[in-house]
Amino acid sequence: MELAFIIEKFVLVTVIFLISLTVAAYSTLAERKIAGYLQDRVGPNRAGPGGMFQPLADGLKMFFKEEIIPTDSSKALFILGPSLALLTSLIGSAVIPWGESIQIADRLVSLQIADVNVGILYIFGVVSLGVYGIMIGGWASNNKFSLMGAIRAASQSISYEIPMGLSIIALLMATNTLSMKEIAEQQHGMNWNIFYQPLGFIIFMVCSFAETNRTPFDLPECETELVGGYHTEYSGFKMGAFMFAEYLNMFLASAVMSTLYFGGYNYPGMDWVNSMLGPLFGPLVGMAVLLLKIFAFIFFFMWVRWTVPRFRYDQLMNLGWKVLIPLAIANIVITGIVITIFDKL
Amino acid sequence: MSISLFYFVAFLSIFFALMVIFAKNPVHSVLYLIVTFFTFTIHYILLNAQFLAIVNFIVYMGAIMVLFLFVLMLLNLNEGSVGSKSNLLKMIGVIAGMCLIITLVGSARVLNASEPLVLQTQDLGLVKNLGKVLFSKFLLPFEISSILLLSAMVGAVLLAKKDIKRV
Image (spheres, each protein chain N blue to C red):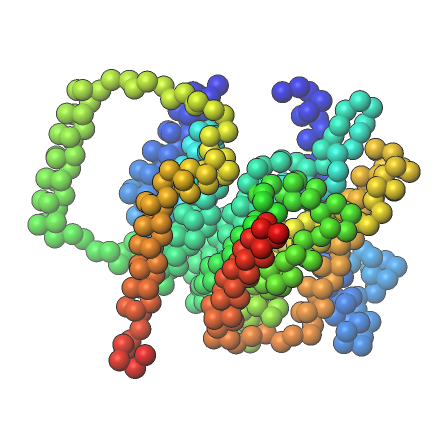
């Protein structure tokens, strides 16, 4: 391995890491601002112009709060829980193609950290691992409300992983590849997968809401029934880590949805822009477009949160098993039939 | 480099597998088992079988072990609740342990190093090749195992129903 390669990847990892953290931090502010807007009030506006420094103040507050570890909890696991939640939400962005390769001097630098040829499955694996942080944290707290939250999270995530996987299978049939890079390249210009897989996208999106524990699927942290849910016993920065992991997951889910279904870094007229700006700045515009799509999805997540009320538990399970799984299987069958017909023509 | 990496990961696998047995708390035991499965994933990646690695990751670590953990958390077993074993159980344990030692010693006597595995083609474990082999050479076993899984699923649903007549 040459030195330039290592430096290039190191810089890319750092940049993606910083972007993820910044977006997650400002998502907390955006959530409160949007909630304020939807409920016809102002939202946070004291720290800095328009509340710009609110995330900073919130972070500082989290750091300076007292960290309490309950006496009866198992201490190692109590600390492992939030750490694992944060870790799994950060490693997912490694396979997202953030843009086309940019050319610096004579070097072609790929804007993807790792082009794994089973990229989608890697994301799927990371998502399925994400529940461990919540489960371990909830169990280690030694509190019945936390345990209930943890168990809800586990059963919800297992139930919704199945339709998610099935909707990905239909996407694979349409794209013929598992690599995120190739999927992004296939959607050049306006040739986005959403036009081929509209039903698959809807199923995938509903499942992403469930996997990231967002309203209307946020039963693991249902305040009215469970005090606080899986993080009842947490305080200070460990509580902050759980909250931050949720926003990071939202960022990752938005990035995955944009890349798989909404063209990733592709936009209409990109060839013209690329030829005007050259091989260094053209792909950066693509990256900006991808980030805009991600922000649009994050806004959608928040919009839904303040629009749709929380489901009851049986409604959640019914939706997962009796509606989404049959729909996803029907989607696979329809995709198969359509592909066969088009091949024969 | 690859060989020493293999030995390191193999050591980790055996270490965590032993920790599964030696951990007093059942939940810790399951967590060690998850780590053991993770080391298996690394083994698959070292063998260039990326698809198998990621499927092992998703199915075993992400789904089956979550269910294990789920059940154990509900059972709420603690270190004290297991209780002391009766004398009969202890005797059986001693005999089983002796048998294991005899087997291990016997197998150690005929131990010889196997030929190192050489991959014919580097992209042997990729999804495309795996799919082609599964749907041509091993089509019958593949389909039969899928029917087996389906029947197991139907059976599980049937067992979970409380009253079959009312269905």
